[in-house]
Length: 250
Image (cartoon, rainbow, N blue to C red; front, side, top):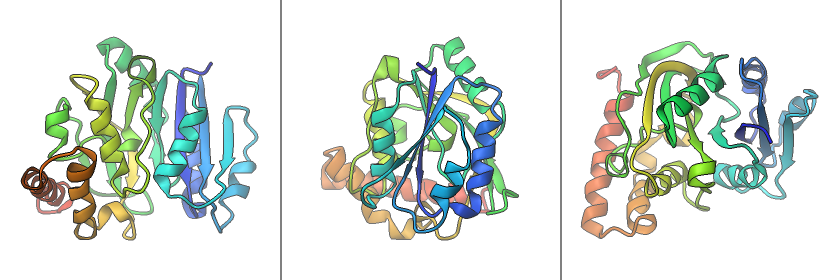
């Protein structure tokens, strides 16, 4: 069994896929499996992945286009590693990402950990200040802002089990992390920049004004909060999101 399972959804990612693949193949830690689910891409993403003949890479072709959360769940079903980590098909890891994260989690006896990541343009050139892993993460403080980014986080499935993504939510990553943090007291920060996030202008997660309703439903539907409590946390999330990405604060 590999020690680490990497989970990747892929949909029409051909412009960035080679860089993402290289960032995984160049990892100093080699005991991993990489489970990529293609979500019915209409470009040549599948052909790019298939060019890389490595027994550690498993490609799944989704039967229908179901979104990133569904694609991640298909990969998670096949995952065998103790440590689960995520990398979207347009993001990038520094060569020491997995090694540093695994060592940190073992040293700190952590069940969830997250690191800094660089916030870049589509050419991986830094755009604003790096996102800092500077606080321990709990269920309560994660309600106000999602500090756990998929590309820079890892959890120990041996201790907390696999956590799947809710279907039909555009905020599926936030719901998944909240559900995990219901099980454990704290996630720990590793303050090193070991990943690069592409701040693509057409990204769903970048269009905060378009997903306020979806964020409200995180609290109302998935957490079961009252309307007033859901509005309170949605407001906090919106303010924190503005500060997270505004150049005024970065």
